[in-house]
Image 1 (cartoon, helix red, strand yellow):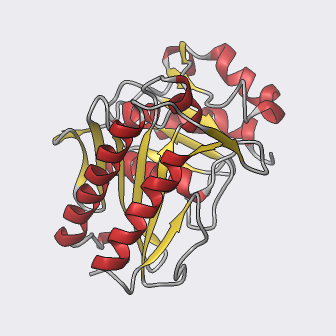
Image 2 (image 1 turned 120 degrees about the vertical axis):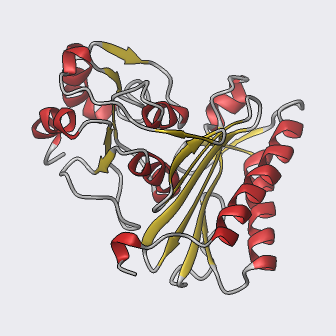
Length: 263
């Protein structure tokens, strides 16, 4: 089997769903409580829920697959050079979690020898879940989904995620895209990538993404028939970041790519 055809064992797919179920149970409980907030050295918020979920997921992975590696947002990597590597963002959208907006969730990805094979994104309150698996496509809540084709920016639904927060240094490039788009998605949420996979959003352009932010979303969009690269047009790898562009139609990405290169 070639690398292009390599897929993910069913056992690992089922385990990813179990991890997401576990995270969802914890987060549904945590969101009902008063949220205590701390701030990391980079100024981003973190809560006990972030750490509780990641600790639980790490323990589950260690118990089931002790030779596998783990990279997460809140704790140092474990066996980062392992053949199989789990990449988890226990609470993507901590700011929205603190604010009480249901735009947060858990991201889980699995890589084999450096190649991303599985991506799962779930929102525990709405119970929406996307999973993309190499060779199996992408499903949302159990149903296959596909991106849509839209080659013209003036007809496109576009997200310039983080424009008013973590992408302040790129306003000139992003404003050009935003101003010419047919309509703009305001939410800074992983769910926008799910909507792109569902064929309801056409283009996402952002910067400031770490591996735990993009790993799962990359697989979800690609397996739904979309494209994901950095701003220089290079496919994402475990070493990529911080820029990202995701599109349902390569022609649309090609339209804006010249405005982004070299950032």
